Length: 346
Image (cartoon, rainbow, N blue to C red):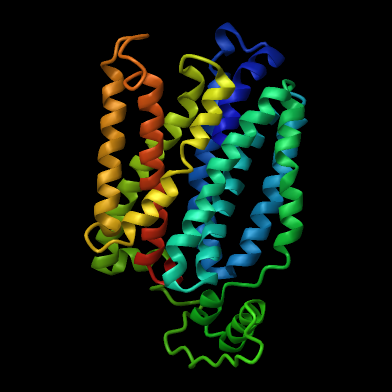
């Protein structure tokens, strides 16, 4: 959704602050600062959530995300706007990643594919809704204010969430983990269920030098697994956000293109859920196949003449097909990554 924000609002910022000639580069600089913050937030918040817990880091990130979102909406000049977008990237990127992990750790592994897909589905819905808002709200400050305001509602709801039972257990807080599991069981109608956990013998100590990021370097299996997954994440991010941000450059209506860019992701989630649960495809083969299809779609668009090729092979259709398939791959990578790592480094 925040990628869509950059796509729709760039022209309006240019008009508002007269970013022309020597200052024209600032139009895209704000979006670049957002993604730079996204990188920092993903690294920083992941480590903090391993040490301090999922819930407090998630709540802090969501709170700051809302605050800096409002700063973006009411920024008196470009410099403050650009810096606020940088901090929105840090908080939004980190908070989103921690919330995904927290959601996965609330349920058993057999439900990870479902909960992961439903969580990522909100990205697609958010992009489509934002395009609709952008069509009716043409003043970018008010648009930023309206699109940011639901964060307050979700912040209040999030206070009712329990801490991750898996994280509590990994920290040796067995009693707290039992209480959370009992709370979840009661919510599922299991009133008479008594939850008892064995004492965690491999609890992570605060001064454990092998925990966190160091574990990824120390253990050969985790090291190679991390290198491969980092490259896959890089490819998925590059294609996904590239196609999302480029929606405004495609022919036709800007708002329709952005909305379709989000809606086309919706069928990707049942598709990937179907394939990853099959023994003949699984996570790895499905990810590979979807990335190949997405890559081919993007490559073919380079060789199509403008306004030619028919409906099925138009640049717009191929771009949407590429967005659908890379979204499926991205969704699988989210789920696959959470399954390949232990709780202490997830």
